[in-house]
Amino acid sequence: MYNAFFGFKESPFSLSPDPTFLYRSPQHEEALANLIYGVQSRKGFIVLTGEVGTGKTTMLECLRDFLETQFIEFAFIFNSRINADQFFEMIAYDLDLRCNRSSKTEVLFALNHLLIQQANENRTTVLIVDEAHNLDWDVLEEIRLLGNLENRRGKLLQIVLAGQPELDRKLDAPNLRQLKQRIVLRCSLRPFREEETVAYINSRLEKAGMRDQTVFPIELLLEIHVRSQGIPRVINAICDNLLLTTFAAEQYTATLEMLDEVCQDMRLEWPGRHGRTRTSSRYTQESFDHPSIFTRGD
Image (tube, rainbow, N blue to C red; front, side, top):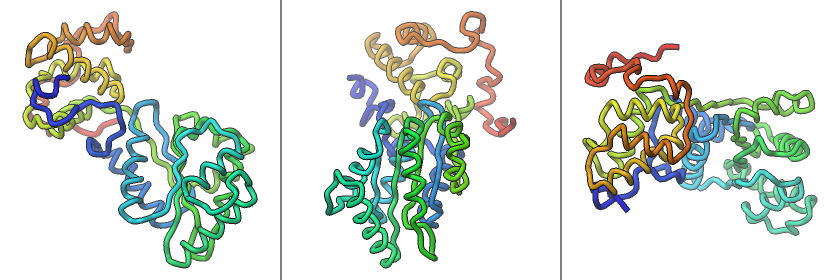
């Protein structure tokens, strides 16, 4: 609705996990590098965790793009509220296995045949499970058993489990210690720091067509960080609503009053909401004029 008004080629703050708008923060670069390395090196089990809205699904979309460019076979399980039978059926559909997909036995035989064939061609196969913290215990046990398939060159099936921090706690359970021992790589996404939030917003605006953005003044960017608590999905929602509010007011610069209105409509809560002053940020305009001020402290 507001794209033409601001001169955007596309919406800068869509909630869809679009790799085109990936902001390559150090932690996202590291997570994606670990995912790709784990697959290429046939490490077996890789776990990606992070709080809601920190970009896990975007990382998986980037991994899928990589797998497609490398012509690597993969299955993507996006709905983890499934039982063991449904789990094998979804794998069979995604990998286009020629078998009775409702029969676990036939799926396992067909899958084993595919994995051996891929290995003979010096290729691998990947299983990606999103929202893995929701998986039932018996499904996790089936996944562990799939991880046993290997030859002398490594694991035949690379398994990526992505989920909220509850996944880590689930994997710590005594009955899953065998699965936990097989996890070779772990990646974790955290909310953005203040300077990362500013760079993230500017990056998305630039990729949408606004190179030197003037819509969000620096004091507003800092306040968005506080109210979003550095969570990318919340940042997107706030900024999208702010752009809409600014457009409706026929203005080209958003204000703190508009941000107040947006946060009220979104029913946002954040630490110190009722006692914090708007000028309490530890960064100032001068900080962003001199980026070297930023350090990666604790």
